Length: 383
Image 1 (spheres, rainbow, N blue to C red):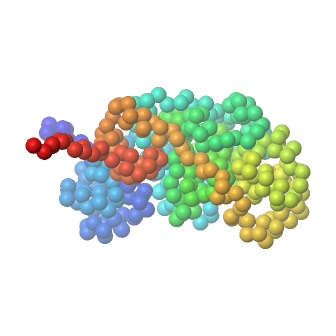
Image 2: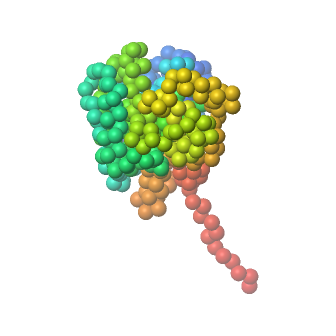
Image 3: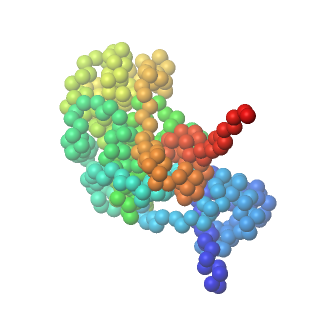
């Protein structure tokens, strides 16, 4: 018994997490490994001692995680923390599991860096902190959007970089391809963590992605304390999404300034506004309706005009506006390595996921964490 205590313990939750993040069922994993589904279920049970090393090697290869991943203790997590998904109706339970686990990886990566460096202080307010959902009046949401602009000293003009702004205010943001999962973004603010975490789709246009970021901010300030059971009620979900959308519109396009800049339904005029505000024409048109500047008739007219020009999904300037990339984790890991706090290989081993995946999540770039080559050791001269 004394000898066993010296060895790290297999963490069954890690196997569940890795399997779900790859979108693989226990039956599929069992088939690929060449064992029974019952064996996988046993390995995933609470007090499991884990598979043999040979079986674990196969599982590790199939799930694309290093073996030490299965022995790394998980962070404590309150199961009552709600995860917000900005998703289409087609989004499945499977896709939500993929991204909720990705969020947990981002949290662990962020915590790792935060234990070595001083991260920005969280300055994101929770305006509503009740755990049951009660609809908030849309006019009140407009006021909250204005309050947060005042709190952060933003004025009423366009925000140059929404992702960087949220990172400076204490959120950890990362991107990932979501194209196969019908999800635009997701976020959560764990009860035992002072810091919120946001995962964004990197397959969106720059303008639409900015709206997604602001939408998740809306959830953080309005809904982050509610229980998952409240969020999962169909009627509540629709209203919660509507509130987050209204917050995003008011935050990105304040009535005090944006409202004064609309003086025409001309598409050319809207394109010029998009260049300044960096928000999609669709979102700006809808905001103009919210503010009572455009009528419902004008809204329908403009939607038809956008459809005629094939602008409903691909708009002018979509390829010109700069995509807002997360910087917090990238700069943190560069500081860790460049200041000699940890070596590159140490970082990869201690985080416990594949180097390529860590580089992608932190936006470090391909091969940044590759071991440095020794180069030439000796230089010989001819006699």
